[in-house]
Length: 127
Image (cartoon, rainbow, N blue to C red; front, side):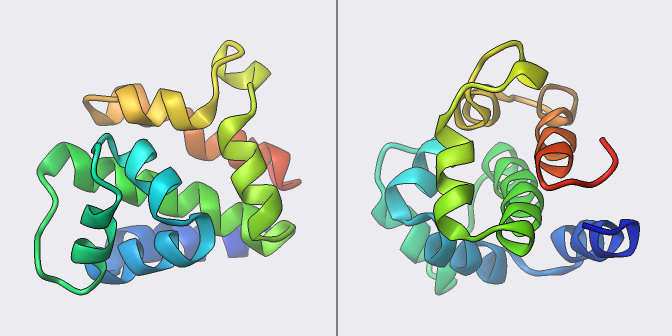
């Protein structure tokens, strides 16, 4: 992954509306994993966000945008199957926690800030 690719993905994560981000995550990771990462118990909420029926709360919005960054980097470098495996596996850059668990428990940008760099490093870009 090049720096240019990484910058484009970061731009998309900010510029895209949450419907587009939710739809991408739903297609790439599935509803269950996306819901888990977002911190909600009902996987059907992901589909509701993706079609604009419901807007996620601010903390959930943050988690979705951070998940988008990491997932886009991984799918670009590998594929959706590898991205799913990365999300649920332990990660030494995240103190041996799974990226999904770290993001699910993130309450603010500071707590979420290590997930995208961990994905970038795994995808072969600069951490």
